[in-house]
Length: 185
Image (cartoon, rainbow, N blue to C red; front, side, top):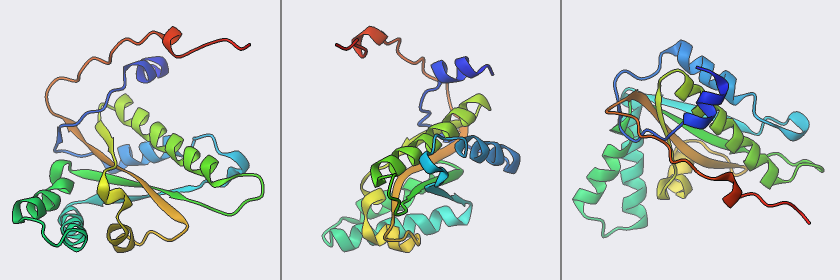
């Protein structure tokens, strides 16, 4: 796929199924992510891959976090939390790994990690892999982040769901750049 086609045609694919990306495809995704703009070459990101039975374990972690945060949670809400990681065969958790630096504030490091995720999403689209970047309450839950081994200097910035697209890909809306761009002064 041409680079511009990938950039202009990428859409979030919310319904994915088996199979997930192959090891070689995952390697390509991570190689693309590592090309993100990165002030001072800090590489302020890392990724966790969750597949197979580990998805069930992540679902249990979600349910446990919800039960601790909202002890009155109904069984159906806990079951929904358990099923969330099962919506895709492969999840990649994107983590901004922040480092003290005199010239690179944390906000720049989080943005660089976000660019790494965008590169990963573009590489997925270019390979025909369905992908969607999700956050939600569990991305910010201290029980979840502790259970995943995410340190105090780190931020979970997204759950990337990956798999084979189910159904037709939607067509991205055509946006007019003039609505977002102005000349100064």
